[in-house]
Image (cartoon, rainbow, N blue to C red; front, top):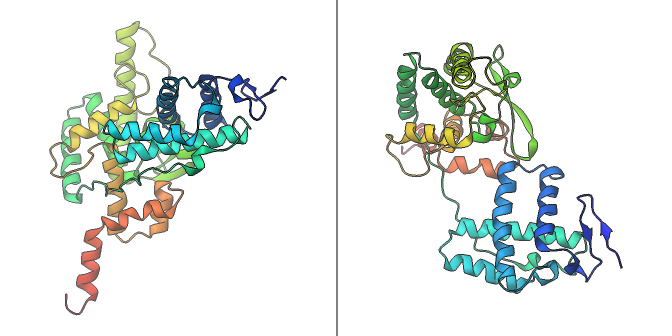
Length: 331
C-alpha cells in the first residue's frame, strides 16, 4: 500500500507502518514545518535540529531508524544519558520540549500510533534572575564608548550606536542584526523589528541613541562600505540594506555583537551573562524602576506572555525600596 504524500514531499506511511520513512527524512520534514508553517526563527530551528539530531543518533545506536521505534522508554533513556553527561537542567528541559514537539507532529500525521511525548517529563528548569547593570555603571560604559567613537573610527562609531540602541530599545540581538535601513524612522526615533514568531513591533529610542545612530548612518556606515569595496575590487562596495555592517561590508552577525557587548560589560562588577541580553534585561528593569506599567513593558519587549515580563519585577529592588521608604510608617 502506498502512503500519502505530505506538503514537504515525504511519503507518509499509513498508521502502524511508520518504518517506511527514515527518521532523518522525517526530521527534515518536521524542521521545514516549524520553519515555514509555524514561523519559528532560524535560531529556534537550529536548536530543534541539534536536539533531535542527537535523539536520532541515540536511536540509531539502538538499531532504531523509524518513527515506530520512538517510544517513551527511548526518550527517557535519552534524557537520562544527557543527565549523566552533565548537561544543565535547562538543556535537559529544552531537549524534552524538542522531543515532545517532534513526537506530537509525528502523531498528528499518523506516523506513530500514540504520542510518547505526552508522558515525557523533564526536570523543571531553574529560573535564574537576569543580570541587571546599574544605571550609573551603564552610563559610564556608554560614555566610554562615546569617547572612543569621538576619534572617528567607523567601527568605534558603529559599536557605540549598537550599544546605545540595544539599551534604548531593549532589543534582542537577533532583532538588532536583522534591522534594515527601511526599518529605522529617524524622524520619529523608532525602529521596526521582527521578534519571535515573526511578530513585528515598533519601539522607540531616545536622544543619546539617536545621536549615536545618526552619526553611524551618516558617516561611519558609508565609510565602512567604501573600505570594504577598496579591499575587494576597488570599485563599488557590496549592496546591502542591513543597518549594522561587519568590516567586510556585509550584515553584522550575532557573534560579533556578543563579543562587543561582552567586552563592554567585562569591567563592570556583577555576575551572570554579559552579552546583549544583559542590556535588554537592564532596560526592562530600569523602565519598571522608573514607574512604567508592566503591560507597557511587555509590549515594549515583545513578550507574548505577561508572565515572562514579570521576572523583571523580582530584580527591581530599587523600585521596591523607594516605595517602601515613601509609604511605610516605619521606614
